[in-house]
Amino acid sequence: MNQEEEDRQYKKMTQTPVWKLVLILGLPTTVSMLITNIYNTADTFFVSRISVAASGATGIVFALMAILQAFGFMFGHGAGSNISRLLGARKVEHAKIYASTSVFLSLAVGAVIGIGGLIFLEPLIRLLGSTDTILNDAKIYGSFILLAGPAMTVSCVLNNILRYEGRAAFAMIGLTTGGILNMILDPILIFYFHMDIAGAGLATALSQYVSAVILLFPFLRGKTVTKIHIIYVTRDFSDVRNIILTGLPSLTRQGLNSICTTLLNVQAGVYGDAAIAAMSIVGRCGNLLFSFALGIAQGFQPVCAFNYGAGKYRRVKKATYFTVAMGMGILCILCGICCGNAENIIYLFREEPEILEIGTGALRWLCGFLIVLPVSAVGSMLFQSTGMKGRALFIAAMQSGVILIPLLIFLPRFFGLTGLQMAQPLAYFLAGLITVPVVLNFFSSIPEDS
Image 1 (cartoon, rainbow, N blue to C red):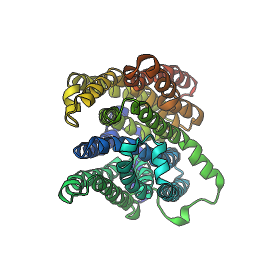
Image 2: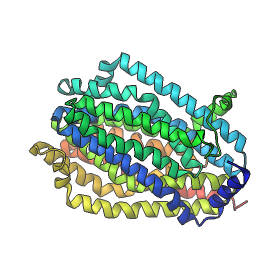
Image 3: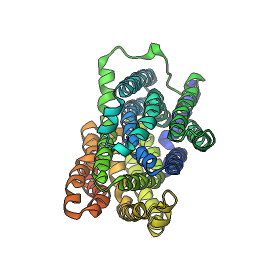
């Protein structure tokens, strides 16, 4: 990329009206997230055609995928936030160091987790909450996810670097291609080749590697400001430390999500495999709903980080308020529709009366409170994008586990299955209440535009 193109990109990021820029960068991300969540939901749908045990296995392995994504997002957001602020401050060479370092670190970590997980596969799957009846399917599905570990972590990093550079369209192409490929391969491998749950696992693994290659392509073709090459990997530990500390909220968020998913599986296991399958289906539906709002919110991240680095603080505030309002408005509409059709939605996946009853109740609880999730999500993104590591970590922990873990432990004791269904939605609401004063305090402390 030449200097003229770099100047054009800088002007776009610092002078385009904030609402318009958030939407320009957020819409491709929304498409990416929708496709990703649709193929996750499709994966659950096709696997659910096999058996209840297979459907429950996807819920168990989802926690394993969250672990891999946790490290991918840590390196991706840790590098991306720094890269965007450096580009806003016109420090391009240092941005290249962060990009290459994060990619190679994520590749190494993904490989280590994949190899270690395959060696200790059965105890790992049991630790994630598998019952004896689900164990075999979960081991088969989990082995393919572990084989795809390096691709999953690297894809997270490449996707986030592209987004933080303001190149969301490139990220969209890589992620959507992988998602669409997964949806095509699922029925072919599962039913035509009679591979059952192994076919679902193989489809996911292949699509992850294809997606990683496509995401790498813009860097190799010189379409980005930053570069991916071994010569740019840092020898200064302070750069690595900054990536990790800035990305730690993402690791915390995803790691706690994994812990909470495991705990949810364990608590649901008390009520049988049907409860695990039902809560797994509801979780995928919730992720699909939230992807509409989260996609716009991820368009907010590069706007926030770039303008903060450029000293355009008023634009940071405007972007925050717009993104929260937009996300809550979208979810109000979608959750209303979903709540009114909750039973029919669960019926698309499984027809068993017990799964329908548990899933319908859980989905209605989720729809009632999911509309407040953009408050804590955008708050965490705000602090991570501006380099406020401590506040970002605090909000991420509140949003993803510190509140939810005790609710998952104690609510079922007092309210039984209803307590399990209401735990996650109530955690979203409480996290939003905690986030508001922290964000307002930050806004009152930042200076005028430089």
